[in-house]
Amino acid sequence: MNDELVQLLTIEIKKYDELIKKINKKYYYYKPLYNLLSSSKNNKNPFSNRKTYEIFVEKMKHDNSIAINKLINNKLLYDTYNSNVNKKLSEFNLSKNILYSNAFMNRIKNDVRLKKVYNELDKMKQTDELLCNLNREIETYLCDCFFNIFDEIVKEKQRLNEDKKQIEYALKNYQSNQNLNDNNISTIKNIIISKTDNEDDKNRLLNILNSYVLKFSAEKKKENNEPKQEQVSMNYVDDNSAYYYYDDNKKESNTLYKNYLTTIRSFDNYDDINEFLESIKYDYDIKLIIFNIIGLLTNTSKDLLIKEQLNKYLQSLDDTLSDVITDKENIIFYYGFLWNKNKVLADVEKGNIPKEYYPDILTGIDMIKNNTARIKGKSIVKIKKVFKIRINNIRITYKMLSDNLYIILGIFCKKDKKGYNVTNTTIDRNNELIGSEKAIINARNVECIWDEYLKINSEFEDELLKLLKSKTKK
Image (cartoon, rainbow, N blue to C red; front, side, top):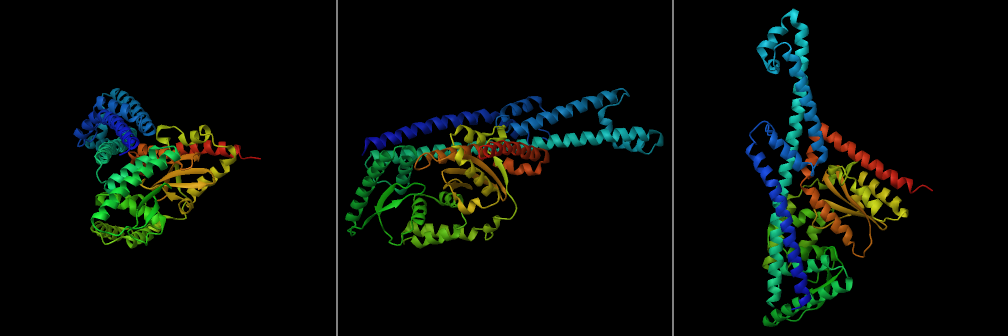
């Protein structure tokens, strides 16, 4: 047992304690509003209660300031109109309810003397319905946004607790000098890779873990009177650090397929395997990858179960996956637009990106727009629908929201050998975005919101392109 590994895992558990504390705070911040809205789901107007409306606006303005501002402005417009209509009607001892009295409206409609009055009242009614329906549409949209956000918070809360338990279990087995299962090894290895910045320290800790695993592997083979097998190196997903194991299958010659196979073997259930497959689903060679992984499987009981799941997944794949690419230009959004903050522009301005790299950024943005980025890029493993393209030292990460709708998560200049800054920042931004993805996609059905999204992103892009093109002129 090595004290450094114990310390590293202990620190990681403490970090998870902080993350769990943070997500719990967020959970309890939104829970009262969730209860209020849930109890009024059958109510045609959940914001008829002024207090509910005020609480909603206060809490949601941090998650989608654009849509909230639209709600506030339209509600103000409607309230102003409503007040003016009531004031005008009161001069004739009428109330606004008269507009929705079919008997009254039909009576004056057929009276030639009141034709002018009818036309004016009918115009009032149409305007009232238009503004009312628009407000209702925005309210419904924002309610859906909120429930999506809260659902993601609940999922994240559960995930953090489960991940912490995995680390605690791995630490317990390691401290007890017990054999580590695949999940334990994967957990410890991933922490070493992601949390150790110094390459020498990283390799040293991986070698310590390797030695520990090999010791138990050798003991097990000795107990079973198995012949000693050749020790070979292996590269794990998204890292080039060597990890040693006894090669049970000489066909595992391709690093990419070995990486995927090792990751799949580390999972304990079908859900985790499916989640991983979904994360690489948008690689164009997904079927080829799965066929090659199946070819590497052995006849062990676990591998046979994995083979069954992979075949099941293949059957469920849509044969038209490659048809996602079309001649239609993609719509590009920029991370931070929901809060009216141009964070991608800030990446370039504050990220110390040399000006000579600006043409590469322009090239990358064009590649995403015209559908060539995913051919030359690669998916970031375990982040569903998130891709990274490389143009010299520039890295652009982006997410596919729907067939031709993408959001750029960040623009980076690679400063470290492994690109941890790129990956970690992308993961953080993706996590912040997850709860709002459906809202962005569904905004296409709410014209006033969608137009506002397009407008703000167009402004963001103009700012970014102005900076990039002004610095590239000779």
